[in-house]
Length: 78
Image 1 (cartoon, rainbow, N blue to C red):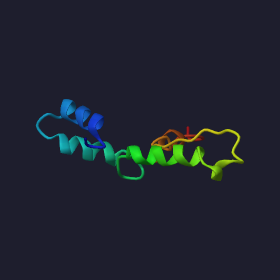
Image 2: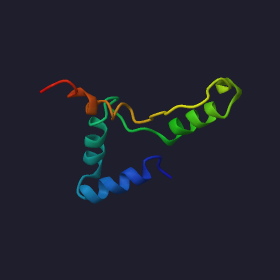
Image 3: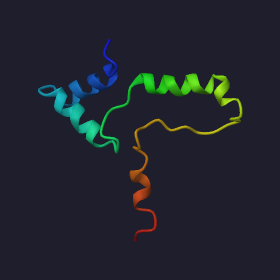
Image 4: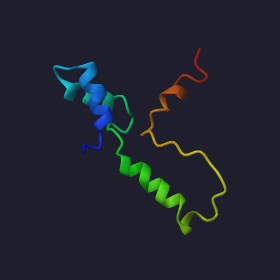
């Protein structure tokens, strides 16, 4: 199974003639310039479940390649 299976389904729906172009466009909208992998989410889960995170008592962890950053670009601009 492809790690981007759901994303590929969306790409095929949005651009049936060229789903690869849709994937490229999705990736270009992410500041890191690529789509994330399920393994990257798993790595955070593994870390939080390990002894190495024993002093962490809570937090919010965003795994989005910086996608939420553009929302703050306009802060303070009129």
